[in-house]
Every structure is written in structure tokens, then in C-alpha cells.
Length: 118
Image (tube, rainbow, N blue to C red; front, side, top):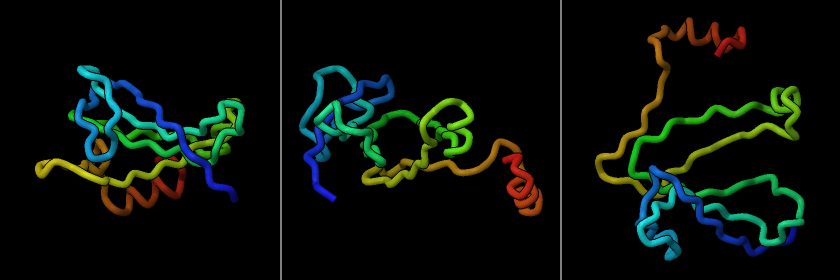
């Protein structure tokens, strides 16, 4: 596998930040940047299997749910999307919320996973 130099793309988001240090010196004065995308420089190259983004937020973000390959194919998309988050830096009072909207017992959660309803 060959190594490639990635090109940086700045994505403005209303929930973004103007302080991207120490991760990037790039920025737009006054425009909040929410994501730094590391893309292939050759726009004609095949789409990579992995998209790497750095997110910068000053507001709560919701977790997005993406289709697996089977669901994506059913919707006419080439592939699904697996997502992983790794927190590189956070404010001392930052939190990560994990859970469901409604309270469920461990048995109810296992049953929902088994029958595919969750």
C-alpha cells in the first residue's frame, strides 16, 4: 500500500470553533470551523475506504446513525458507513452522553438487539 499526502479541507459549521490549535494553524477569521477533512489530493482518485475528520465544537453534537452495507445498497448507495470517535482533546467540564431515550432493562435491550428493533 502506498502512502499519500492528504489535502486538508476546512468545513464551516455553525457549532464550530475559531480555535483549531494545536491541531491546525488553518482557519478563517471569524468563521467557525467545525471539521477538518483529510482528503485525497487527486480528485479523480478512487474514494478511499477511510475518511478521517477532526471535529471542533463548542456546542453539543448528536450522534449520527448510518446504514450498514446492506441497508445502503437497498437505498442505492455504494456502501454503508461505520463510524468511530476518538476524543483527542476536551474541555475539563466536557461530557459524553450515552444511552437511550427511554429507560429499558438489560433484558429488554438484549431482546431488541436480537430482534433487530434497535
